[in-house]
Every structure is written in C-alpha cells, then in structure tokens.
Image 1: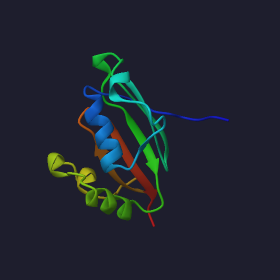
Image 2 (image 1 turned 120 degrees about the horizontal axis):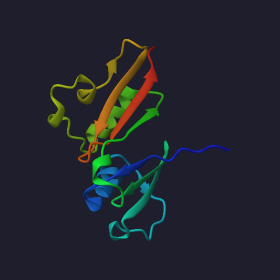
Image 3 (image 1 turned 180 degrees about the vertical axis):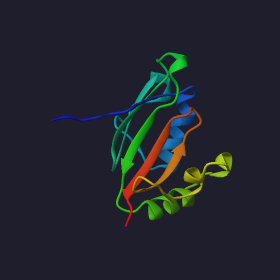
Length: 124
C-alpha cells in the first residue's frame, strides 16, 4: 500500500491549525495534539496532512493536488466557511474555479505560509 502525506512547513502553527480546521474542515488526527508540539497531523475526507515548524525556513511553499468531484460546490463551501479570496486578486484560480487549457477545472487556496491546495476535477 502506498500513502502520500504532504508536509507543510508553517511559521505560526497555531494559526495554520486554525485555518485548516476552522475553514477547510480538517480534524486533528490525534485529538491530544497541540501547536506546542511543533508537529500536528490533520485528516479530512481527502487524506492526511502534516504541519510542522521544525523544517528549514528556506523550504516554504508546497503544493498538493486535491481531486474532487465538484470544484464549484467545494469552492462555494469554503467561501461560506470564511475563505478570504481578496489577497490574490490577480490570480483567477484563487478567485474561483477556472477551466484550464490542460483539461481540468481548478481553484487554488494558498495559506499564509505559501502552501497551496490545488483543487481539481476533469472538465465536463
């Protein structure tokens, strides 16, 4: 069995955990974990994600492709939970789902540490 668990490096783990749990519906894999641990494992319907403060400061900015059945409803859901798209006005894929020339419909969410979740589905 193969399993991928992306590792995102964070400057402020408490803020990152709040963003992923309060806005994007991730849950703590280990409920007793806290931001004071320096590493937090999260789970969602998409899989697992690990946040850490223990990595080199020069390595910020990871990307994960997340394949979903309906990017449009997923985007609307995250906006209803507080996703702020105002910081990326010049990036159409951060403003909402966009049909890409390579045959996918996508939107991106980039956290305050430069990590991006790229939500994708095949164009219909």
